[in-house]
Image (cartoon, rainbow, N blue to C red):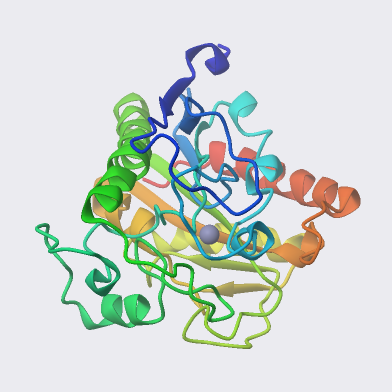
Amino acid sequence: MHSALKLIHHRFQQSQPGAAGLPGQPTHAPDTPTVTARPGTTPLVLDSPHSGTQYPADFGSACDLPTLRRAEDTHVEKIYAFAPAMGAAWIEAHFPRIYLDANRDTTELDTSMLDGAWTGPISTDPKVLSKVRLGKGLIWKFTDEGEPIYHRQLTVQEVRGRIDRCWRPYHAAVAQAIDAAHARHGYSIHLNCHSMPAVAGRFATEFPGLVHADFVVGDRDGTTADPALSALICDHLRACGYSVEYNHPYKGVELVRRYGNPAQHRHSIQVEINRKLYMDEQTLEQDPAGMARLQTDLKALVQRLLSTDPR
Ligand SMILES: [Zn+2]
């Protein structure tokens, strides 16, 4: 079945027509989809929350586009472009991660960025708060280089609008795809797809300046997937010649935490790919040879997962 026939789109609805966009930069058309969801036919679900490149007209950031784009997991959706044809469900964000980070909970908000009182719940978890302090909550405050993203307060209404237009449809699509895969097959395997810079930025994480492995596979210390399944992924990638870290320095965040439940045969695993393997981090240009090699190896991984019943 060609699942592309059943594309589900959620669209931006400009709440503030004519609002200031990025200085001197074109923006996308107002009715561009914020999320693409392609239904699958297998137990596999893949999602890419950070590869979106459509910068909304109401962003109102103080940074220029090249600075903002360094926060993207650029080209991740192209790496996995083979997956829908193999029967995997596919969910992709078109909104940029630096506009709203779908790999955060809506409670991970720095309310000091707002011009008024936030009435929704706010996290008090110290681990979560440490990320919010780095400026890496639901709405980022600082770039990975420590540059402020806004020279203004955000209105409570515009943050609510971002959650409604971006976060809610994205999470609804991932939840629905996993539920559908689980209903069909009695188990689901969800790969949460990301990429990372070759070297962690100074204000990016709790490990500034860390030189990353080729891949980092995360299952929040075995809580979001059967560790045997994560080990299968690590072993496959190592056999392909890559260096692979497991749960370090990235264990996985909200998308695997929220949807992974191995006791119910719902497995969610975060896969981080080192950008040096497929692109120039300065120009954002793809490296065709690197891209082709990755796709061959990841296609074989998906094939292997399709023939693995983790129960
Ligand atoms: Zn990412």
